[in-house]
Image 1 (cartoon, rainbow, N blue to C red):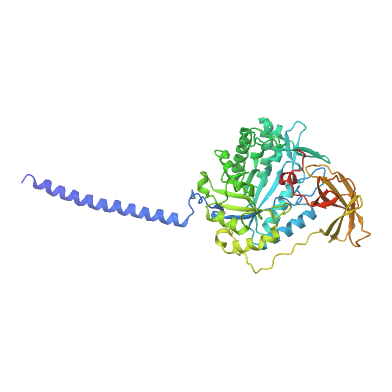
Image 2: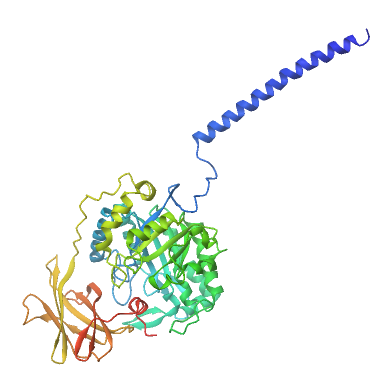
Length: 508
């Protein structure tokens, strides 16, 4: 009898607990449903990182299939003693606009473009090597580049510097090319380069969605004491100095923009030296000479890196792979992108226009993965945009006439305004012309202009460049390296040139 009330009370408590438990379960289930609904309706606060074989564009992961557009004039951003030939110059603007129209029609969605390079233009320096800012044409050129890219729905990867910033040092016509080793070696000057030169550019780009990434330096290993010991005339600095510079610029990129940061190594095995600096992906260049040592058909995961990897440069023409085969390797072996070298086609590494159709076919077959969000996939049947430049030359002809070398060509000027043409003879590896000659109407071939060079030495390789000026001697268009030639035993030949000497015109 004494235990009955307890049993009754215990039963009531059990029922009460059961109903409370059901309530708790219901509340928890409702909360879980609410959380799932919020997660479905709203974007995540911390989006998942992209896959190692993709890079983000507007929140989506893509394979960046692109082209190096290293430069149009060699001085695309800024001005200096050679005159202003940057993107905002009317002639240069029209040419780049035509180039980008063609690139877009060929299915190119991202291009890699050099900005400061060896610091010949764009940055202003004090005599003691401190950077004081950007020159008065730089931002206008930058804005013109963004305008053209947006017009043709093309994204940009800006390469800020090349190793020529400090590995070379020469002057030509009042312009210094390279020679900035002291600016890197001194920590205060290095900081000024970032704070006064790089950061104002980054802040100016803060509101743009056209720039996907900044490649801080192209192939810095050529100028690192520990990584390139060969005595080849390049000026070198300690690797730690370059790493500190890269780290400072990376932090500035992440602070001032939404873009990614990377460095392009001169070979795959050197990418590891840029770990620990906050880079968003790694990049490397590959050329034929590397195949024996570091085969291109190496899976990205075999490189043992902690970020996605991009093939930043590969020659359109090489002895191993065609353009689509190279893209296939990068795409299937886990890389996050690949950039062909180059639209410029000014060296022995391929003719872009000859290979562009195969690029169009390749990206058209993988549009969802490489479109970078474009709603209009490339069509292999769509007509390619016609390139119409303000100034062009053609019918180039080189002949030996007694003791002179005659260079003849035709020039077309869309504006029909008067101009003056001069031809320049450079010994390969020299920044100063050996001879500059005004071109005159040809007496032998009507409609052509002729320059006679009299100072070529037997056995030495030369490059000929062409300058077009208005009547006030203001440069309108510069064609660098329209032909290369050598005199060998009284005959004109076409020499094979070292790519380093073609690109960096400072005597070693």
